[in-house]
Image (cartoon, rainbow, N blue to C red; front, side, top):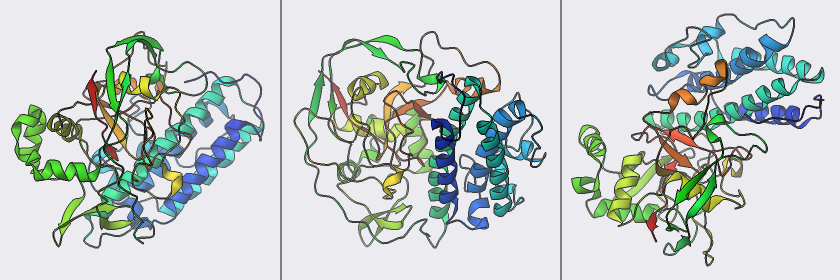
Length: 424
């Protein structure tokens, strides 16, 4: 966590305004859902929307209000068991694969819970808050933005299981962009570079400490790999050639019968995909998404390239404007790259999370934060790979060049794609 200004918070403070904005955004995301939509759990790795909305509220109640607001009355004592996620130091909890069994409370009660906690947080902020409490509120806001993205990816997975293929948003087909042109490779000299967050503003603990890394010269594609390019991989037998795959990935191919990206299917000889706007034709010019690490790595091998390391990606992204196709655009699916410019990278932020070849591991001198908050990231630094850059369902203001997302290599339900790299 970052160190915020020690001045007392007021109603107009940036932290208070951010809190209100984030909480209102979550309510808007939940508005199109029925209680049934928000209750069902489509697989063990996904969580019901109702759980996301309640868990983020539980975080503020447990981490911020109970220790810091004298006289605070807990909304419902049973919620500590229902909506704790993985905080061992806080107590027992509903097992993750069985969150869909929480048919009660009703979604309306979850929104009442949110109102109850919001009123108490407003009271705490109006009284003035210490820098430590301000940090916790800021962390809670970014935590909730993570769950806003998860809520959308999990709803997409749920709706994709329905024979009706319902749309979360207006299913009207979106216009497609023009052909993005052949990818150009931008050269970087390498050398000793500074990696990690510099301490200015908010960051998760896993983004630091800032440290030096040695990079060999490399080149990075100026745009993301497209659906059209991935179709060429499929048509060339990419899913049938074991020489392209890591052994664990090939085992997943055989066990799960993967033959195309997640959510893809064929209709009248054409590729279609499930989106948050319902089933739509695959846009060949848009970035391919819903790939596992194994699929991204196999495509890169097929193309005669490789995935970038997370340090190569961060070095290339440093100083770039963090503009892109995020959740606020309302598109809710990746869009084709804009016009190419000599020596300039496109689509570094938004559209799809970009798999890197780097395992999610601690930086030099990393130490988890003390207390329950220390369970936030450090305990997951094993068996996961880093993704960078954000996606079309990432909230604006949440992403940074140093942001390290992470998932196991077989994860496919996230908006994850790739950018190619090569040695210079």
